[in-house]
Amino acid sequence: MAIATTNPATGETVKEFDSLTEQQLEEKLQRAWDTFQSYRDTTFEQRAGWLRAAADIFDAETDRLAELATLEMGKTFAAAKAEIAKCSLGCRWYADHAAEDLADVEWPKPKNAPENARIFTRYQPLGPVLAIMPWNFPFWQVLRFAAPALMAGNVGLLKHASNVPQVAMAIEDVLNRAGFPEGAFQTLLVGSSVIEGIIDDPRVRAVTLTGSEPAGREVGARAGQNVKTSVLELGGSDPFIVMPSVDDLDAVVDAAVSSRMLNNGQSCINAKRFIVHQDIADDFTQKLVAKMESLTIGDPMDENTDLGPMSQGNGVTDLDEQVQDSIKAGARLLTGGERLDKPGNWYPPTVLTDIPKEARAYKEELFGPVALVFRATDADDAIRIANDSDFGLGGSAWTSDEDEKMRFATEVESGMVYINKITESTPEVPFGGAKNSGYGRELASFGPQSFVNAKTIWIQ
Image (cartoon, rainbow, N blue to C red; front, side):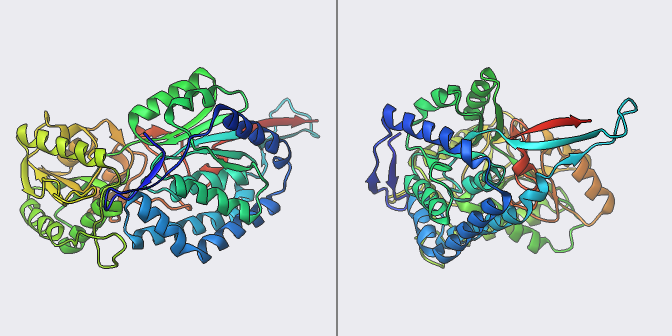
């Protein structure tokens, strides 16, 4: 794929960029390694100061940066501004908390240790970390990695998605202007063909990827061959369970649509599979379809727009093929289901139900504005349907029954479960998946601790 800015709302290629030459890439890798030798010795106070300065820049330049995200990947301007605000929040959170998260941990003395022994763990940075990041949250996905990694004393190398190059360069510019040393964070404008070589490079000490399951398998395998730390945040097909005891079904439907349509339907933690108790399934489905059909589709810069374009044309093609194949397999289409005939990457809000197991929609992640409705006979059946997936990123359940709350929280197989709340990614709370949704954890204290050597030290 060419490295280029292509407006998803119009299909127009706005600007193209040259990939780094081999020599330019070598220079950046060496700069990262050289910078790390001194950056690792900076203090938490220095790094926190630079990170707070970055937050100030995000706050001051929210509109300009948000416009870049809308231009390059099509999210609504309001959503883009909210993403920039989250980046500022993340920077401030780690500036305030990373030193505590990475403080020495003292351990009780074993029986054979003398009285004067001191035994503790010290967290030390690994070195340059390669981050392979997606286009769907082009600022936040990067800062979710960069803020804690930089606070831990690592330096970052960003291989961003090829359709958001201006966002990638803007992030580097913000961090440089905030005061981070040159080489502490660098954007690599390169194609995917060179990623294996970068992971192989001995100067690169760890890798993190947010992306598809196939990409995660390749990157995780390559990191494993090199015995390097890796964190993978992959796809999701999150369940959204609704039980008859909910207090306000209309509010639950509003939450369902908000979660499914978040980021134009292109989020790993979107609710995708709506598993509804049979006693309220007809009512829920009718309300869901009506709400989906009421959404305003249009210019993502317009404040009245609810749903903008999908990011890429091949994403629209893939999604439509999944929908049409599922209908042919027996799924029933309730609304939408046909790409819009206009320039750009447009797909309408779509609802499928009566989805058979052999349908693609049953087992694959649908990365776009398509909701899947399943009927459950009881809580056991809802949990069975929720867990009948290779994915296990997040999930939510909506019930007023205390026993059901704990059952869903405990028995749904995922890295995160939210009860009576839609899933989210926020710096205060750990984030990560189970099963084919990846491994490792980000955010909260896991963020700074993901890329460190937890060194045991015994002094006597």
